[in-house]
Amino acid sequence: MDQDLQLSLANNAKEWLALSLSISSAEKLAFDKIHDGFFTMYGADFMTHVYRMTFERALQQLPEMERDKLLLSFKAAMDKAIDEHYSRL
Image 1 (cartoon, rainbow, N blue to C red):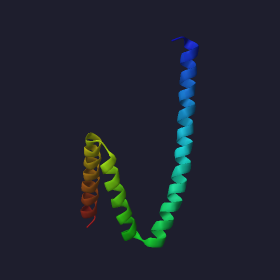
Image 2: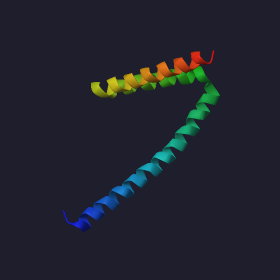
Image 3: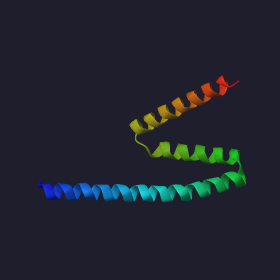
């Protein structure tokens, strides 16, 4: 591969990365607004139900190896949250 093509591909990759980050930021802002509105309107119990349904649907769509990684991450986060909760008591 010649140097011009390599430079062009690298620049193209940088542009795609910048675009994906800007889309992600815009989507994050939109999600935050919707999420906060639902949380304010319906409360924590409702949102807990939504989070659980979302998590379960995501697990159904993932390959087994990815599902196992997600469940291990979830367990680690739960263990940490429980430890932090009881360390404050």
